[in-house]
Amino acid sequence: MPIENIKIAGAGPAGLTAAINLAKAGYQVEVFEKNHDTGVRFHGDLQGLENWSRERDIIDELHDMNIKSTNFNYNGFKNLRISNGTKNWDFSCEEPVFYLVRRGNIEGSLDHGLKKQAVDSGVNLHFKTNPPVDTINIIATGPIKNEVYIIAKGKTFETDADDTALGIVDNHAAFNGYSYLLISQGYGCLCTVLFDRFKDASKCFEKTEKIISSQVDFNIQNPKKMAGLGSFSNKNIFKQNEKLYIGEAAGLQDLFWGFGMGNAITSGFLAAESIINGTDYAKTAENYFKKKLKASIVNRYIWEKVGSKDYSFIVNRIHNSTDSIKYLRSFYNFNILQKIIYPFSMHYMKKRYPNLRL
View 1 (cartoon, rainbow, N blue to C red):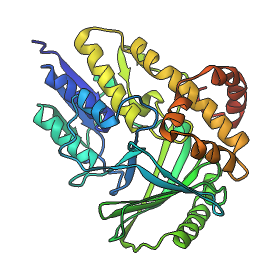
View 2 (cartoon, rainbow, N blue to C red):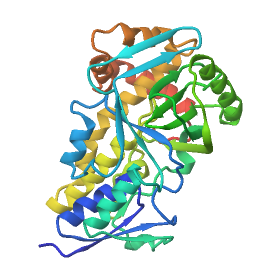
View 3 (cartoon, rainbow, N blue to C red):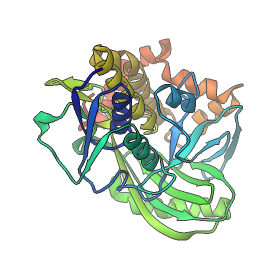
């Protein structure tokens, strides 16, 4: 049985997934987190485990990656509405489009659940600690702040309103991005997600609140401010100086819409498996993620170049497809059309996002 001591920097979903798998395989694992607990930068935020880019259900994949779904709350959404402020599109799918989970150091959140699973597996957690970098085996420290391409601003709250998923695509509410109202099991999150003009975040949130309040009747209790950011790279560093990089520390996000939890958890699992089995994590991660990352660059290019007026052309195409989930899934396969468009997308994106490694 292996007795090597593995040290991980970062107690987010990526780091804890790696830790759980290594501990279950018999390794001694230490996780170092600079904050005083897991998930402290979140305040009960509702975030989506997206289910449209994978062939299998994400909850089933979590089980395959030794992550139990029994000690955190999740809620699958098959129905949602997209609006551009003047037209609404209602979607009803046969399988969940995404699963909503809560984030933060609170009971029932994904962060709290993963923390408990890590401790139960024998992982040693050290908070408010920054160990020397040269002692770390796995880097899972989250977004790279000088490579930010997306920010979120909004508020979380308690509510007695019914479960709701409403997305807004309107450049006054979220430039080149989207806004949303999510309500799940008595908790809500109202947010704008911008891919540019970050200084206008407050104005965009005001517009978001106005548009959504005109469409949905919901009450807000005990509101708390929330904010977030994301980084992305297409020149990913998966391994450097014998250290493995996972999650957003490796640039693993979706440039299209900014979803990253699924990628983060998967990368943590792949890193742990590479240590356990003695395989090449960098090669495995490259094979798993590269096409998805390239596809997301093309998707973002099309979204900004084709949809930026009112987004109706793109949303209509998705809505009119016979199977919306299957159609969305095709966007992440890096198909022949995407391969043709890719060089043009890269040329545009390098100018559009000069701070990103593309």
